Length: 101
Figure 1 (spheres, one colour):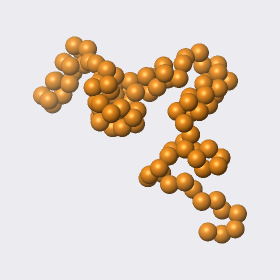
Figure 2 (cartoon, one colour):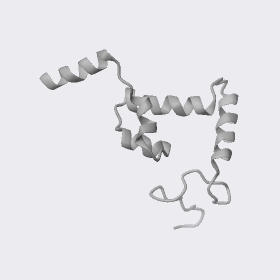
Figure 3 (cartoon, helix red, strand yellow):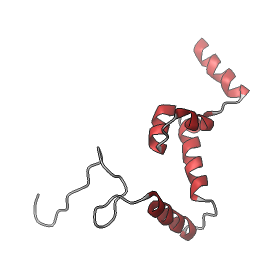
Figure 4 (tube, helix red, strand yellow):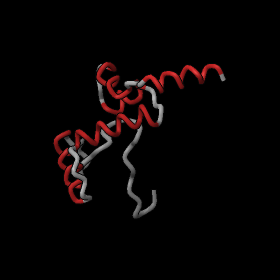
C-alpha cells in the first residue's frame, strides 16, 4: 500500500463494529451510539424497536430467508426469528397462487 492509505478492516471475519483502537465494541456501546444518533435524528423509537423493524422488513418486505435474518440478528434459535415472519391469510393465499403461475 502506498503512503497515506489506511488498511481496511476485514469484512469476512471478526468484529463489524470496532472502536478507534480496533477493539470490538460491546453491545452496550453500540446501543448507546445508535440511541444517540437516533435522538439527534429526532427518532423517538428505542434501539430494540429499530432492531425489530429491520428484522420485520428483511423477512416480510424483502423476502429474506429466516436463517439469514437469524444470523444477522445473532439469534441462536431460529424460533426467535420466526416471530418476524408471521403471515396473514392474504399473504398465504398469494403465495399459493404463485405456484399456479
